Length: 265
Length: 341
Ligand SMILES: Nc1ncnc2c1ncn2[C@@H]1O[C@H](COP(=O)(O)OP(=O)(O)OP(=O)(O)O)[C@@H](O)[C@H]1O
Ligand SMILES: [Mg+2]
Image (tube, rainbow over all chains, first blue to last red; front, side, top):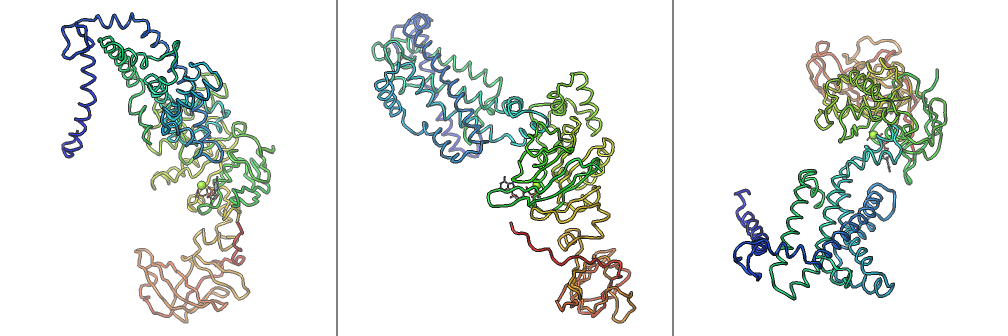
């Protein structure tokens, strides 16, 4: 932090404190030996972790959430990457409009999207709630797929693919040996962002839940409304640990600067 | 002599803009041909059509006697060096150079040997394992060249290969390119907007303007005999006079002499009374600008480049005679009409 900008520096520190302290409270209470969600924790024990990991609704919701996030991420990338290529490299009219369309889920409130999906697909077409959720999450993630891979595509010189063609590569070959490797960090970061967005999503999942398919955040929310014991804190701490592990792996393999460098363009 | 490539009536139209206007062009086998002309005259577009990156709007391009107008680039076997070099950033120098060989299924051992040979040819044998980002501009340019040569292309195409290099390296690389061309016997097409580069390097030079070819020939033929005023202007003839018969006479500054009025002049040469309007001393030589009236009655400004020791006393306002021997007067067609685009 540069001392020459005291106001900005202090604000940043304050921001970190505001973000991190509540998380520390949650983590601390999850190790409590007592029976209530209270700070400071009473003693130390791992009992609530054991409870969380053997509580069936949490485990099945975790599996549901992971399934949903994984499949939705793959779908979003499968739709988003070709769309990005078409927007940036293809000779199609109205590129701006198309890109805007793909980015629009960032602006439309999720509750509106959720309600629309609920009315149209679940009520109107009688689609199952997993499929509807999958569709909703995929749409929600498209902006990341288009924006982040688009940013790394914009950095790649179009002459590279031409050079590969000139050396004897078919368009497909040139794409797979030259363009795709250059896009890999972008695709990786788009995937990571999409996955986390889906995994943490509440509004859509709340609207489109059913008795047999419920995501983890929604299940935890339900649980908190009924009882006030530290099992929720333990589950939250486990999710946090998982996210940190993913982040560390991402940092070691690709690097944050490379992963997130493309977002703010 | 076989043509390595031949354009017949080739045009490239972007929207309502004609970038290349029905050109006919023969690229001689085993020679170095330069495409020379000012910015925007269509050099890159011509090269891209030859490489297959842009399909001509009309006309026909033969490569090695075979109609290749619609052949995709990967089937043409031409080596292209891009102005930006376009090296693959995720591959090493050796992998870049070997990329085309790998696609041609050259066995690994032979591939490695050919990559090494090609890198030696361009003087980069020691950098095979480096990533392109680590290299200087001049080295990157050599890698791009090696990558294009390694596939043993029918033609080597270079788009302003030297323009991103500093002045000294540029002059050095002209000689290097000529050496590589003669060692490999490759047919080379080189795009440039630098007339010195074209004169020094070409076996054959093609002067372009606004999508058309103005003149083609060996530098030794083109330089002393520019076909029209545009070519003469581009090649540094700065003085243009309209002769009594309406044709244009061009004289290079170094061939125009400034003498005292009434001195002896060569028969049949140029001799005009003129007023000195500017004198610029440059050490070995000086530039004398004069105003005079040519045979058509038009006011003209001429520049003479004379040795300083030959004429030390001229000053602004002097009345002098400017002369040029008949052998130095180049007659050419009057101004070519501005092409309609
Ligand atoms: N894809 C395109 N769409 C529209 N116009 C184009 C396109 N490519 C080239 N042009 C135009 O065609 C003309 C010729 O371009 P070209 O790149 O061939 O010129 P050049 O002789 O290589 O010039 P330079 O020395 O600046 O590289 C230019 O006016 C350019 O703006
Ligand atoms: Mg050009």
